[in-house]
Image 1 (tube, rainbow over the protein chains, first blue to last red):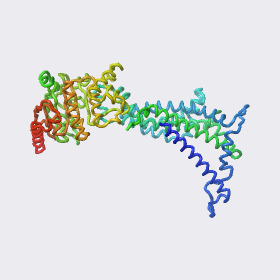
Image 2: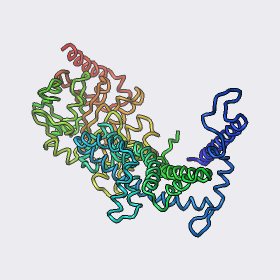
Image 3: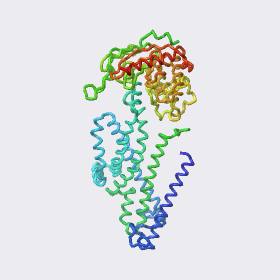
Image 4: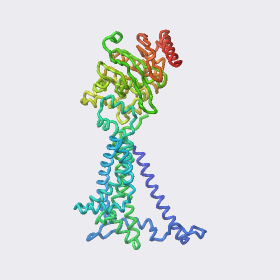
Length: 288
Length: 264
């Protein structure tokens, strides 16, 4: 990406944020004037605008810079959330990596044996219909009984969400080369594994990276849901759980933790984007 | 250097070859029937015929990408399978089939990489090949940055990089515009002359077959059989040859054979 393009992207992102804040505050101001009714009508607004439901954007921002007591020490909220997010990031990263490995292995397995594709693919689809909220305690209880730290169980839940898009898109990508490309490799007397490494895997990259992006954000979601459902001592899920319980008195705090979770999602998405640029697009922009 | 070397050895020898697709099912297709064909080393053979005559199938039998249902295919005195495993031939397809994640050099080096050549040797050979197809200054370009004709030249360089004795081409210029096509034909003849490779060339263009070949093999469809073999001798060919009465005679002969095929 050129410098100018990067600047323009940053500008658009900022502009969107400013517009969103303006919309939020504008809506809130309007509701305050009309006692939560559409101006000039008797119809109620879909979301009430009191400070509990919609705290001022500035209050949420102030909350982020405010201090919070965590155990014996007192920390700025940003540092507190960053620490929690770092923990969640680690879980998500482990879950993502495992999910990519498992997903790719499944894709290669289904490519190699057609019967595996027919037999496996329905189950892979079914696996994603199991509600996470039901699955999480099962996995975590199992991990605890084995004597593993909670992180293991939580990462496995993230893995469960991430392997799916990688397996499905990966299989499509591995099958994407033209039959003449496969014939070409055959004419070189290339083995199945050389064909996989020199042709199918590189050809699968444009299919894999969108799946990786989806998997990366899913790994954050999976980690947070995992943390919440087992009640770990740390992580963003813990922070969200704590703040949710005191939402009635301190709504800004829950909002700030939600912002932290979105930023973490954005961060992992950005990491995969950078990897994509490095592995596919680098130096390959068409000159014409 | 090439013209008289043809009598030395059989490059390809096909005996009573049949090819049936989906045998014993409702959509059984008799693609080829009773094919007998000898190709001498150093020959430039074109396979021509209406679509569905099995010319690409025949090429794939030689390449061992398909196995004959009956009969025998020998390449340099070996079975087609042994010849493929020994990489006695290089192949060029209609669509260049270059890998778009590899630059031009890396594409040419792909077969050498698979053979386990060292990086230095690969680089050296790809330079030589780029010189042969006159694309030296495009070594670091990616396929998408090249025109169709240039892509096909890279594809030819890749097929010849490991110096196979046989070059199999499946409508390699079929997707090119007329001017590029004629230019590529002259280039291909130059490469053929310089390398001494035997060429089997599938086409559906009458002037292309007549211009390039030392022998044109005309196939008839459903089932694919060899209708006739036409020997052409235009000597050293240049773009002027296309206006030569000899060339006109050769195209007429091929055209009439094809008409006879169409008439059944």
